[in-house]
Image (cartoon, rainbow, N blue to C red; front, side):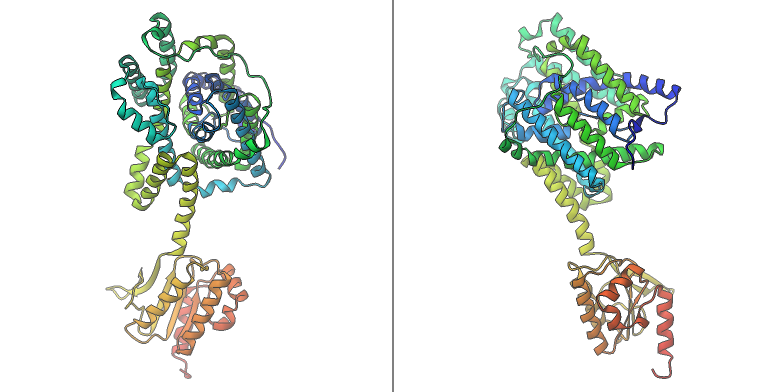
Length: 557
């Protein structure tokens, strides 16, 4: 498919362009304070948060396809690489910034490789359930990390449990004014988010915080401020990172890669469905790769398709990337004309803004819905969240992937199996299979609810034997309803052949019904057809039963 730049801008009319440009200004008023907060999560200089809202946004608008996705700093990816980089260098130091840039560049390379090989489908392997749990764990981790600045307590520990322990043992050292300001900021943000989500409450809090800091000289009252910033538009540069340091960053870049693919795809799909837009995940991969490369070269850090910022853009009325480009223009204006005022922003105010972002990551309603609908999946989500809090983000990512795959394998390994049995009206209906059931005298119609492969072949053969051995009357015909079986591997083929030969020796005829062309090809290839005969394979259950009826009334029987 040929490359088409700025796909996320079209189709656009003059009216829609003006509307989206206005939405971009509203988005900037809500998002710029959060970009500052994301830099705080990432352990980067505050100004680099603004950098993620400049060149990366332009790069995604140029190379990506989604009309709605906002690609900038994100709490999940910021937490992932900060947890690793903080063990290699002092946060906000020149070495730390260089490592963050290289991480973004490695992530961009992985995304580009994924685009070349069309690996957008990888997003399907991280289930929504464990993604909800992962983000909840990140929310708890980030929220706890911000409480030190909110309470005015210095916290040296990098682990969440260590931070909780330090806060609990230093409650007497809480700075009263910091706590009061933090509580007020959190209350204002959350109240406006609930009742007036489109109002720029975060921007108002930042402006008031800066004004109060200057007018009341809060720094003299024990309130820490951000301090002088290297303000200005970013300069393109490459970082001098050694080969061994680069190799040490591959794991954290891989973790960011997984989260970016899963979270960006889930977000773009969700918002595209609302407005009937097409989703081109592979084109978005190219846009995400370009955005991360732009972040690396401009002195920023890993960027992601952010669900919170995309939702904010929708609330502002955005329907195309024109709004995101307007956001980038507003960021330029802040960097050129308003940046010097940011040095007076109290750290407790910034930490409180980040805390509200963290609270938003904990989707309580979704967790409750999962708990009500599927307690088993809720346990998976909760396990993932606890792993992030206790063991760290990278472990949480790995566990999320493993649990997602295990959940799928578990359903295939132990699928639902049923027997068609007569009800009170003597009509057949599918019921969960268990010993002692039969469809009719001498007949069992059995349904296996998954493909047959090496992991569940013994479940299939053992259950067939058990049903036959415990049937109320001697079984003469055993029909397999294969409507859910689309694949038969070599190992399962051997087991099915052995079973069919064993049952034939006992005078039991095995018949496969509702056989698809794909299963039939596997049965032919693995020798099942030659064992049971072509006259024992049917495309419908009706044909199979009719054949048995004819056989039962044949003079030779």
